[in-house]
Amino acid sequence: MRKTFVGRSAAVACALLLAATACGSNGDDEKAKAPEKLGKGEGKVNIIAWAGYAEDGSNDPGTDWVHPFEQRTGCKVNTKVAGTSDEMVSLMKTGQYDTVSASGDATLRLIASGDAAPVNTELVPNYKDIFPGLKMRPFNSRNGQMYGIPHGRGANLLMYRTDKVKPAPDSWSAVFDDADAYRGHVTAYDSPIYIADAALYLMKTQPSLGIKDPYALDRGQLDAAVALLKKQHRAIGEYWSDYQKEITAFKGGDSVIGTTWQVIANLTQAEKAPVKAVLPKEGATGWSDTWMVSAKAENPNCAYKWLDWIVSPKVNAQVAEYFGEAPANAKACARTKDPRHCAVYHADDESYYQQVHFWTTPIKQCLDGRKNTTCTDYAQWTRAWTEIKG
Image 1 (cartoon, helix red, strand yellow):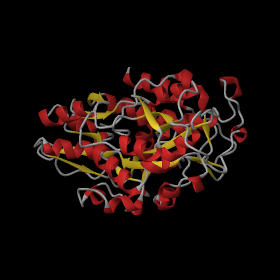
Image 2 (spheres, one colour; image 1 turned 135 degrees about the vertical axis):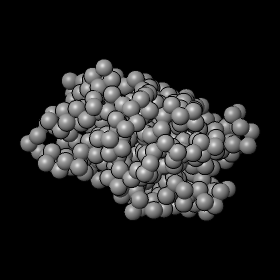
Image 3 (cartoon, rainbow, N blue to C red; image 1 turned 180 degrees about the vertical axis):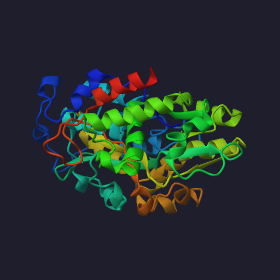
Image 4 (cartoon, rainbow, N blue to C red; image 1 turned 90 degrees about the vertical axis):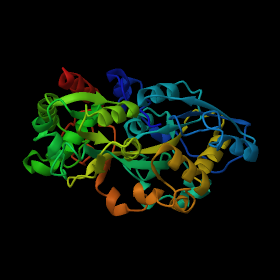
C-alpha cells in the first residue's frame, strides 16, 4: 500500500542543488511558466504514481476512481506505478509523463532540475479546499509559487509492543539513547531520510548543536546525527521499508519498538498484535505527497483535470481510506466511509501536524535560512547512511 524509498543514488541527488548547473539542471526554474488558462483535453494523461493512488478496479473491483475520471473528461489514464522517489525523478526526466505524485524527498529535485512546472492553482478549483497547513510549504513551493497540488499527509510514529515495552514510551529516546534496553528488537525506516529523525531528536535534546531544521544540517550537525545512528545500529534487529514485513516482525515479536506509519499500526492491531503507536513529545518527521506537472507535459490540459479530480472531496476521501493517510481536501472528511478516518489520521488537526516535520530533500543551500553556511545535501546523506549501516 505505502511506498518505499530505498535505493536513492548519489548521482540523482546531484540534481538537488538549486544552483547545480554542473549536475545537468537548467539552473533557472523561472523559465517554466504556469498556464494562464486551459484548453480542450488531449484525450489522455500519462501518470507516475505510488501504488494505490490511481486505482482502476484491477486490484479491487470496488476501488476505482480512474474510469469515472475517464468517462467525465475523455482523458484516458496511463499509469506507471513507481516504487521509489529515485525512480519517479528518473521517469520525469524522460519527458514521457505529464504528472507525478511526488513525495517531499523528490519535489525539490524536480523543481531544481526544471522538470516540474509551476502550477496555476486558479485552474484547480478544488485547491481552495486544501488544508492551509499543506499550502506553500518548503517542499512544494518556491518563492511564493506552488509547484503542485497537495494530495495527503502522515506522520512517522513510534510503535511499540505493549507487553514488551514498559512503561509506555513518550519520547524518541526509547529508540536512541535507551535503545540498548531492546537490543536486537529495535527497528527503523531504511532510508537516508531517516537521518532527519535522529536530527530532530538532537534538535530537541541537544540545543547546543544549533539544529533548527532536521533537513538543514551542516557538517558538524550531520556528524552528530550519524554518531547517534551508529550507536542505535547496535540495537537494530532489522531496518524496514516494506510495511508487510514490519507487521510480521511486530506480530512475531522480532521487533518490539521502532518507527511506523498510522496505517501500519492499524493493520498490525488488526492482526491481533499488542501494539500502540504514539507521536512522541519531540514531534516527528512525516511525509506529504504533491501532484506535480511536468515542464514537458504533452497533455497539460488532461493533467490539470486529473489534479482537480484526485483532490476533489469524494475521490480524495476514497484515496485516503484505501491508501491509509490523511486527505488533503478538508471536505473529504465528510465523504469517508469510516466516519472516524479523519480523526484517526488527524486530518483536520493542524496543531498535530505543526509537530510534524515533513520530508524535505536536504540541499547545500541551508533550508533553515543560514546564509554563510553550507549544509549537507542528499548525496552526503546517502553516503552517511551506507556508513551507518556498516
